[in-house]
Image (cartoon, rainbow, N blue to C red):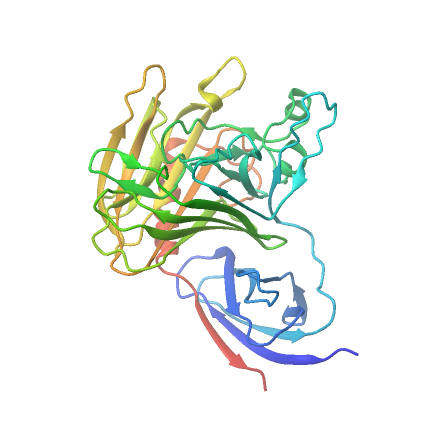
Amino acid sequence: MINLLLATLITVTNPSSSDRTAVPVVIPVEEQATSALVTLGGKEVPCQLDDLNDDGIYDELAFVTDIKARETQKFSVTFSNEAPRQYPAKAYASMSIRDRDSKAKTPKHLPATSITVPASSDAFQYIFPHGPVMESELVGFRVYSDHRQAIDYYGHKSLTMDIAKTDFYPTKEQVRNGSGDDVLYTGTTYGCGALMGWDGKNAVMFQKVRNTTYAVAANGPVRAIIDITNKGWQPYADTAPVDIRTRYILYAGHRDVEVQVQFSRPVSGMPLSTGIVDIVEGSEELTDKAGLRGCWGTACAGNNPQVYDTHTVGLGICIPQQYYKSDSHFTDGKEYLPNQAYVQVVGTDTDQLRYWFTATCDMEEYSYDGSENGKASKDSWFKYLKTWKKQLLNPVNIIISPKN
């Protein structure tokens, strides 16, 4: 017997003068539902229920919608205790424990949703593929499972998801057949948007922690969520340890990732930073000195052109004004490695922080919004980033009300 628990009306209004695609709509789940049905004008909309604290009860419902300028859409949401509804996967996340059998012809990596390691353990060679991964049809990212916790970027050729098959390391045959590939060298930097400390000259990473948990909190079909939790992080000698959970959210139809940071206490006055790797080879920078930073240049994964193809890559990061402090730049200084970064010095007076990062590359055979045709260029990428910031800081209006 199906028990209908709650019917809700979600009103979404686009206040801007431009159309928007794949706009995320996220609402709390008030009942202990096991399924949700979302409709717009009688047509079913793919949705996703997420249990974000792993207590066996769904916390949030998420879906995305295309909405025209000045348009208002009314969605009907019905929660029930029937079996979860199934939809095509447009978002994906995973990680595994590496098969250490060096003689195995076909490695059998053990899928995992959460792995906790003490500070004394180096998980980099044991979490496959070197950290949890996430993907939409437009982009893929990896969070390195070491003290850097930097963000690596996986470029796509076509609108498809293939990391489940390539594990971030496609074979030459897979690349010839159109798969994506690792295109960025992160070095000892943020890569594309990791959060770290800041000592005034360089990023402060996560060497001093009690333990770190790498977790896949959601793996589609509408959004992928990766949580990295560092317990007892002490970025500075005169600072008491603090717990920090960094949550990365990638929605279907998106090339940008939302970053939600939660500290175990308010961290007012604690210097923090994020940023994007300075690609060095022909790297050109965009900044509005108000939270938007971008770059455009030539990148090669692993800094090894003998193994990886060289690509033109565009990166971007957007910090809301209340968290942005200043622009900076650092150079690690190590020989032969271009470990440089465009830095955004940030901070918060509370226990929370939020920002976004995004990426593109010349491998793509589609435009920035996911439609066919349209090749990247520095000018078009920088123009896109400015529009992206305007949309991020002027979100749609969402009203939740009981359904009559």
